[in-house]
Length: 532
Image (cartoon, rainbow, N blue to C red; front, side, top):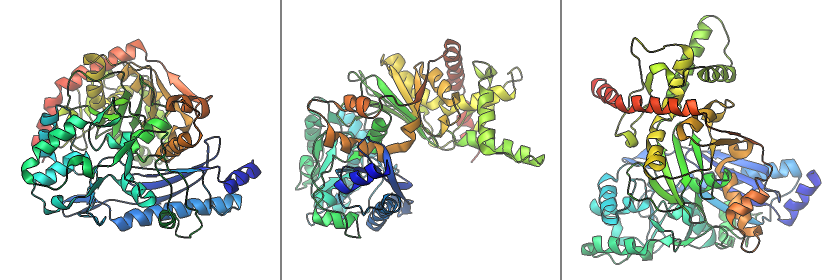
C-alpha cells in the first residue's frame, strides 16, 4: 500500500482540494481511488473592523500557505516524498461576499464576508426588480448596497469576485467561477448554465443614472460547470501556494466552487431528487429540484449544483447550541454527585432517551433561538422551554422536544417545498454534529422531512474532500459521464452508510409538534421584548 501511494505521489497522480471555511482552511490530498492520503489545516478567525466582518489578504495567503505547508510536511513524513507534482487542484471557500478590484488588480475595499447582514435595502429592492429572492449575503446585494450608500470605490470597479474566485484568479490568471459558487453571486439561468442575461440588463437599467463606466457583465467572472478545465497553475501561482518553491507549475485546476457545492459533492447529493442536511451550530438543507419553483419565497434561497442543476436551500441560524447547553447542565448535575461524566456517553444516553418519548413530545414546547431566525421572523432570539400543567414532563419528552426544536425552523422552510410546491426527495444525507449519536438525529430528521435519511461514514471528510472530488472528475471523467454517475461509480460505490426510513407515528408526531411550535411563536416574541 505504502509503495503504491509513494509511486502515485512521485508520478503526480494525486489530486489536491483546499477549502477556506469560516474557522478553518483545510487541504486534502486524495489518491487514484479518491481516498484521502494526507491533509493539512490552518485555523483562522474573521475580524470585525469598522462594522464589517472581514479577513485581510495577509490572513488569506498566510493561512493558505500554512495549510499547504502542513499537508506537504505530512506527505514527507508519511511517505518520504517531496510534493512536486499533482494531477489536478481545486479551490473552494465559503460562498457569497464581496471582493472588488480596480484596473490595477488592487483591492478597493476590505473583503466583506457572507456574515455581513448590512444589505437589507439592496436585497429587498433587487428581489422586487428581478422577481427572484436575493439574500443579503449575495455578492450582487453587496454591490447594490455599496451603490445605494454612495460609496466612492464603486466607480473604479474592474473585477468583482468571491473568495474562491479571487484565489483561483491569483493562481491561474483566470477570472472564472464554478456555476455553484456563481449562483451565490447572482441568479443563474439554468438553461444556459450562466448568469441570467435578463437580470443583468435589469440591473444595468437600475443603476444607469449613476454613470458608471462598467456594465455588470464586464466586471463579473466567466461561469464554468464541473468537468471543465479552468486553467493551470502559473509559475507565480505555484510560488504563491508553496513558499518552499517545490511545487511545479502547469497543474490543471477545476472551476472554483463554494462550500454548498462541495458539501453536495461530498455527500453524493448532486442528482435530482437528492439532498443533504448539515446540522451543527446552524443548520441548512439543500434539495436538488426537478423544475423551477412556482413562487418567490423569503425562506428559500436558490443556488445550483456544480453542474448547474437548481437547488432549493433552507438556511437556519440555530440548531444544536441550546441542546448542547442542556447536556452541559446535566453534566454539571452528575458532577455535583461526584460522577465523572464522559461527554460522548452523556450525549449518547440523553439522545437515546429521546427515542423513548411520546411521538409529539408529550405537549412540551421549546425554542432554540440563541440568535434571530429569519424564517420565522426574528432578528434576535431567547432560548426557551415551555409546558402546560397537563404536559407529560419527563426526561424522554424533554430531550425529544429539544431535538425536535433544533429542526423546527428548518421544517418550517422545508414544509413550503414539500407541501406547497410538491417537491420530492428520494434520499437525503445528514452530516454534522447532530448525527454523531447513532440513529437519533437521523430518525428525527427523517420524521421532520418524511423522507429516508442516510448518514455516511465518509461524509465527515467535508468540503476539502468535495472540491478534490470535483478536480478528480475534471481529470478522470469518461466522455459523457455526468458528475452523479462519476460519484456513484468511483467514489460512493459500496460506501458504508445507514439509511433510516421515516416512521409514520414519528412523522405524525412531528407534524403535531410543528403546529404547537407555530402557534407559540408569539411567546418567543414576548420573551424577546421582555428580556432585553
